[in-house]
Length: 349
Image 1 (cartoon, one colour):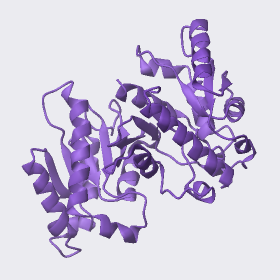
Image 2 (cartoon, one colour):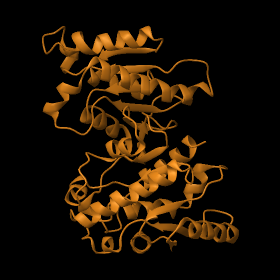
Image 3 (cartoon, one colour):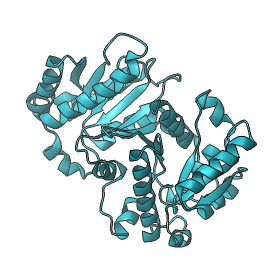
């Protein structure tokens, strides 16, 4: 459910209530369970004016009962959706559009329960609505974001955030879409220089290659084409604007090529992204958060999907935040959530 003080519940209700969602998924059999608080989701359904009933379930057996009854009652997307009550009752009182510890606690509790169910094999994939990091901090949980907390919960060290545009639209890359993967993520800009290392860049390239190899190999016999961005303007201009390209990034790219990866760079990002958008590359490895996020979101923000690479479970998410300024006004765009649901279904096989 994410943080209930933001637009998370609204985009969930909007996406699950959209008649086009089943068409976008195709013939793949699937069913949805929301990990959250049924009363909050029901309120969101009213605000978004969708005909859905969220059934409160206290345990997994009740979830399966709702699924069974809903599936037998209709041929398309069920109008009754199981909501596993992971968020506490106090979350119902969290203030709309305000940073609130009760909202942060709800987001944390829901994420823990969803991760537990995914790792146990009860859920095939997890789709997360946005959380408010300050709200979670006020609740006593000090994590930079979903990605870092999920890595901790799954017991893995090597993860990366990817923003992904699925294929089929202008500026969405080639036949396999376009991904932007980040070497560093949620940190102050002054801190990234400590984390831009040859080892971290190589690790991110390898995570990228592993993901896109699976995506591409089912259709064609070629390796993913990966581009690596520079850190400094104009790729450093031969050391004039910094030596990171010469001493750190280029050696990491050479090391990756020695491992058989089809990778090039460092490229100046301002000229690289137009090439990637028209399909010259399958994926771009960016050095820091805004370098990758801004470039990809300018191409198509509400079609972008956030995918965590390196986890033992499938996790996708919307590519936007809690949007407190428009929360609970019924104007949130649920296209990103719908796209994240479609991506999760496809990735889960």
